[in-house]
Length: 435
Length: 148
Image (cartoon, rainbow over all chains, first blue to last red; front, top):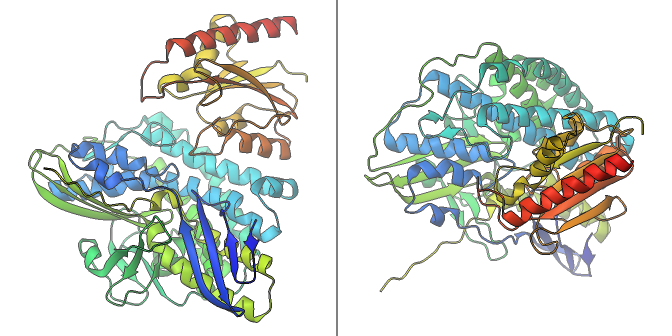
């Protein structure tokens, strides 16, 4: 629902996104003056909350930033802390972490594709309304989401906010039977994910090309999840350790979340599945890669509406990779690498469902956190979302679209990026004065 | 409705959020078979158990519906469920029930009992007042099943 007058279009609450945000569009003499994606959830202070705590607390505390992507927070935090501690994990731990991440991608993407985004292409106001006309597709989406939750639960101990991840590895290996039991469902899920992609490929996607930079992790041997360099569609790749030299967070008055810009130009950039597929298409699993060719995503990979297709391809990829690991899992060796506390600084970036999630920690010689920096993907995407809104609105205004329709289309565009607003509201810096 | 009624208790191990599980444990202790009294973690778990031809009762902890230990009966969709009922990090109970109805998977009406909690601290025991309320609710549900 939107409130409009001659000069301002106000969408007071964005629906079917994670968290709470709003949109303000200002017009002057019928021309677009300004667009503001306003995130008004209160700041959450996680970085300050971590100061002085044992480093072992970081994975479980940062996981609480998000109920949709807790694995991403756990992964970025453990990799960053392991770098600070100079801990090398075993191939078995690394592989199980990828499997855990696959579970999160499946549950998050399946939810967004079927319940949050698909209704826009059928004129439905919600997933519940879409269920009346497309019950089979909605049932499929719910089942895919459940598979993702079950995989996270099997490895992480529970589906939401898993508790088995720790610095150096896992508290315990998952039970072999719990992993094997998932295989038949995942075999069904792979085929269902392929069907879902073909279904989505026929959606009437509006025309809009992102005129900007696509950024995602890139790894020479695998589709990026837990490691790689920071790849770009425009500039040379940079190591994750240089993230803060090339990307910077900036305050904007209309949002409690910081926005991020690419340095030195100060331009926005796009993270997420579309960027990942664009930069890593040849490292998708075989079925996902063939499907990308079939649906022609390579030819239309700059359209933010088609991020839905990239999400579908990543679900296919995640099922295929999961099956490979589930069928050939190797839980030999220690489930956790030991370490001794030491002072140091470490950083890591991993690929949350919504894009690159950067963590940096400084720890002291007692293993306490001195400083934490967390840069979530939705914070980073805000500038690009506003830039794309401006371009869409200018074109729609030129076509004489009504204010209400403009507001609806703008809200639909915001949903394309699957923003997780709760993740983004972390910005406030606490200044302590002690006498 | 041809199948025996189903009671599902939603919960987690955290303080009074165990309320749904406590009701189920008590129901089983009172003789209700496990196939009729089921503990679950999230509203989405209802998909595994519910059918349109089986009467469904859901028990869940909530906050801000009276003082701790308050029992309240809601009939969905006649009553709007309290927004605090169900998790904040997954599909809410209301969304799951609405979707289930549209997909023909759930009965047209669902009874939801809420038990108002006081503390939801990680891995803490449930409070005495909630324990007592859960015991009372299990007794009422058992009696209702016996009468019907």
